Length: 76
Image 1 (tube, rainbow, N blue to C red):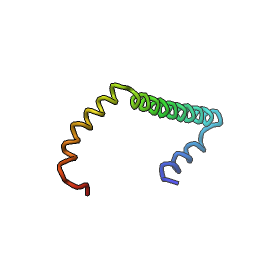
Image 2: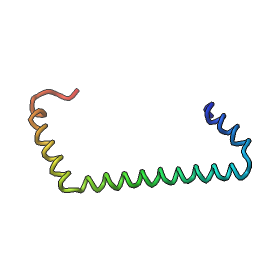
Image 3: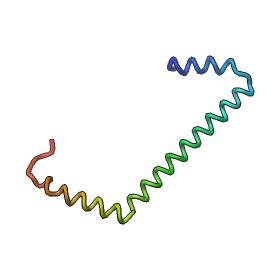
């Protein structure tokens, strides 16, 4: 256990039951929000991958770099 976590535990032990319950509710709420944000980010990324405009732009970028890929230099 890290020193910070140990310090937090020591302070939590000094809280009343009501304060501990409040803290747990806040922590759970924060964790749920983080999970939703991560899911939303993944959904947005998937939507971008299937977006025809994004696909065209990626094809253009690949085309631009295809000339440098054909320069004969090997990947190390």
